[in-house]
Image (cartoon, rainbow, N blue to C red; front, side):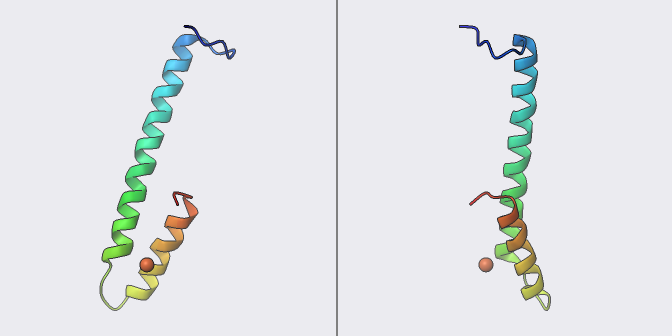
Length: 62
Ligand SMILES: [Fe+2]
């Protein structure tokens, strides 16, 4: 069934593909940022831990 939202079917497919890439990249960034947040070590621990937490929260993934 065709979806009529005022955008041609081929354009809908291209948009859906691009949005899928954005979603994948965003999820990848979220997972990496979370991993760095959890695994940071050393004398910069507090500063980096808080920085990664801020980035995590800014992406609204929670
Ligand atoms: Fe934490």
